[in-house]
Image (cartoon, rainbow, N blue to C red):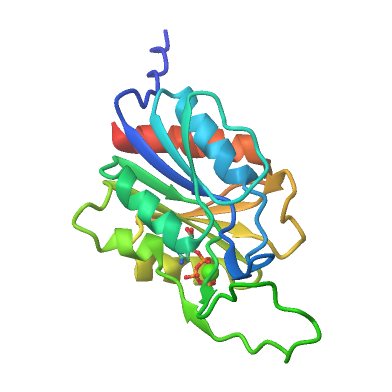
Length: 219
Ligand code: CTP
Ligand code: CA
């Protein structure tokens, strides 16, 4: 007779998940952002909570309901997201799904910039890399997972990010078709052991699979 499959559980484990875009204000009504629905990050937070994890979901501006059993912290900018991650530490694992804006505007206008004014010349400053900072932090979670949405040379770019940011795993997402905001993803999971190619899956199934792997890794 086959032995029963071991129960996967994340009870007693804290996991930080970042999700959604960040918004970097230009003036009171305009901002810079990456395209991101937040759906994949929210699905991962939900799947981790179903396995019993204490999930801290640090969410950029998205219109999504908070998954059951998840503690949600809403933020707007990359710097607020970095601060919220710091506050949520220590954690056993972190899954950085957010599409963080790479730059912020140096001088945010206090009033709405009017079209008739001189054309605005925005100067930008690079935002902190939250994943890379966690990778070199003394409080680095035991399992650190990054995402990489790539349009070309997906594995190569994602593997380079894994090394540069000192992540354990990179979940590489092939976005060469137009999947932004869609309900499925084609994933290549890059770990120290190599690359796993997943079939195109609904975001909920990507989330369930990843949560199961996280539970196995934290056993
Ligand atoms: N990331 C982060 N903080 C940033 C930028 C990215 O935490 N300021 C994280 C993302 O959440 C993701 C991973 O780093 O887990 C990769 O993000 P990505 O935008 O693909 O990488 P970049 O290093 O910003 O490279 P590029 O945008 O030039 O491809
Ligand atoms: Ca980026």
